[in-house]
Image (cartoon, rainbow, N blue to C red; front, side, top):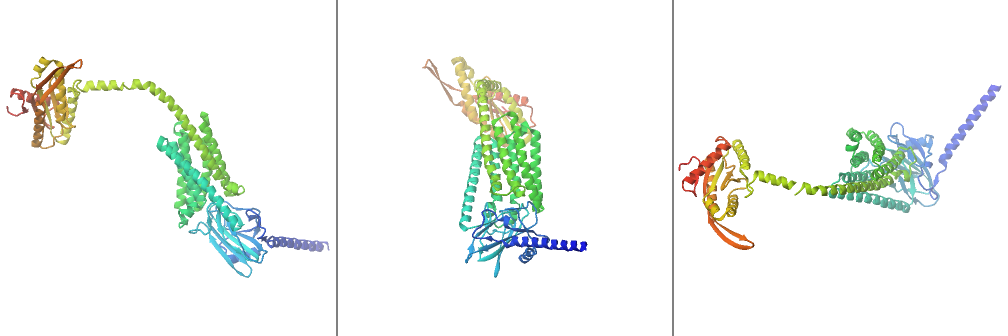
Length: 610
């Protein structure tokens, strides 16, 4: 008897509990939101959710599951599911208490959401539907920096809004219903805020690029590249790139944000490595930075080649998190030298890490997603960019101070180093050039002759030595003194140089004797001899011209001297198999002696009969 009573009581309690649950479930869906008194902010807390299992559901199947109690109430204002989650169905019950349709703006999702299917169901009317998301070309309703804005109109009475959302990237799905005026104001605010961010970053990047071209400091160049990569990253994840640059290429949008995250991190590490001079002060840290950057680039590249968006997302977000931590750790290295620039770098890295960390955790669903956490990355990056600019300024001032000290030391040493250079040049000049005429001396001629012989052997070409001795030089010297004789020698050297090419050599061999070396006369014997004769005749004519000198003393003219001079010229034409440099000099000197014996003011070739 007692057992039957207990069984009946238990059955009644079960029925009562089931009725309460059904009533609570029914009540959850029986209290639609009134469109004339909508709460502000995201409406996720008033939605029912269902994680799609198996295949893709259509609207009818979703409605059936809702009526079967398969949806559960949401406890979050914004749906946040992290990376690679299953597609979600959301249901929102709404009621229009007026007698006329109410047009509103439905603001949903984030700009990187892959696919959004929206359905508006009203009793007695055909369902309305919208499809958007960044997997569609020219995604309808894309609002840069906000998400997607659709334009439903709610008929009088009850309406049910169904949303199917799918995204391989972190699934963040705010839902708002706004008036057209409110939506327009929000777009304007976002437009101006991103205009400021992009303008500030671009101006800072241009300024540092200008400093690089002016100062040639690579830190400024790497910082400009870092800022540009940040601009690209923000443009990608806010939808500006998809809207402006590749609206017809959703496959580019699939990986643009993720690739930009990795590239941004690599550019930041590049800047940090240069700014902190890791190569000189922390080579082991530099090796780690290079390995870390290379691993990130390789991993994202492999993910893209394999067309795995999930793998790319995991690589990008983990790389971004480790990058933020690495920048702070690298910033700690600067504290060893207790430099103001190092402190600025560390503080900047901390702000960047806090901003990036807040946004990343919000996107992953670890902390609440709201306007502050969503835009924390941008706030942190603006502060970080400003502090990095100050750090660069301090570094520039430090370098400038060091340069002032170095310049002072250079000024002290410059006198000794200069006029020294002049002494070395004078020594070189005296060693290889004639002190009176300035042309090469015997020593330099012999060196160049050896080179000419080697070149003749290599090219199988001819060269020539032209020996000349000034006739009647001794009487001029005896009559007017060495001053006039020196003037004649200098003038003769000048005339000789005017008769030959720049590649030829005019040398003073000693006393009133000069040697002209003609190099590279070609590989034809007759042509080479003809060229040598032409130059010798030109020299003979130039030397034979009258010489006029004015001797002055105490600014008063003492005497005007005119002298006629001739030359005895001997020529030896040679190629690689015709003797050593000493042999060639002896032959040229012998040919010149033949010219003297022939009455002077004439030309003789070695081996030519008298």
